[in-house]
Image (cartoon, rainbow, N blue to C red):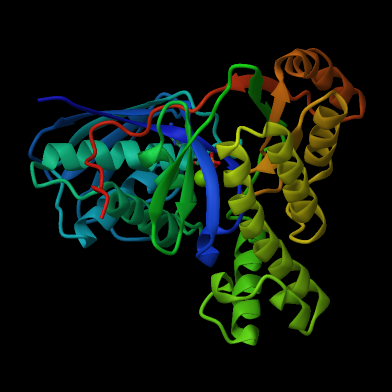
Length: 364
Ligand code: ADP
Ligand code: MG
């Protein structure tokens, strides 16, 4: 028996660092992803290889955090978290193939986790958990086995994406709203800065801790429960700015959903640009190359542009009229390179289909 599972990367249109604050985000799944091909052999070990890495790694099925390091920790973490959930997958050989660039802020990690879990669950023969449960299992693997304190955005996007639609994710209820994305006259551009991001580098965890501090000082369970202007009451300037980003970003996501539903891409662009400014000035997670790319995309006619993903590098997402998009693709890479940064790569993207072969939660 051979089992195949596929899960895409994602790009977040708006709503950054809101997931672990019980807030809102509006991502799309990409049209590229990661495939896992799995041949179970009934043994007690999983031997895994990847097109992107040399050699194979042997993972005992009773692996625990700390056993496996490097890229295969993402796979071992999935085995560990799945067993913790009560599903013991069979051993065997697994090979991974991916079209998602690694470390570009497009969530190659969630694509890998969701594809690996899809294959392990399918081969296990037990009733499949629903997609939201799979997202939580993947997040547990990433948080507790790999050691990256990320929220649920990436996994939910990879599992629930659909063609021609953006998702409106509510991280408190874990409801998935659907917003049609009309891209006939306008274009979404992913502009890879090629300045690699790094979550585990500690800054991500510091932002998360600052949000928790702000919620504690305001006496709420999470910043989702704080009023829009509650940040004004916080005592120190840095915590105030961190909280202000989260509170204003949640508002921008909801306003952005309304703008997209009205097909008002100019209004959506204004919110993207405001989101970028908030990440740059209040949350302080951008870098100069990314700021320049976003500003240049706007100068060249985009409705708006913002960094997407956890930050400190990665990719800028821009929404632009078709003619401006052509100009951005032609002129932006050279102009950013001339300013002394790596030459960015511009790609036209559309919302893609989510992971294959994992059951969806039926609407309540
Ligand atoms: P992002 O998810 O934004 O691409 P992360 O730092 O969260 O960046 O995850 C990237 C890491 O995930 C890689 O360094 C590697 O360890 C692992 N990874 C992702 N895709 C693959 C793959 N196809 N093969 C092997 N490892 C992968
Ligand atoms: Mg990741």
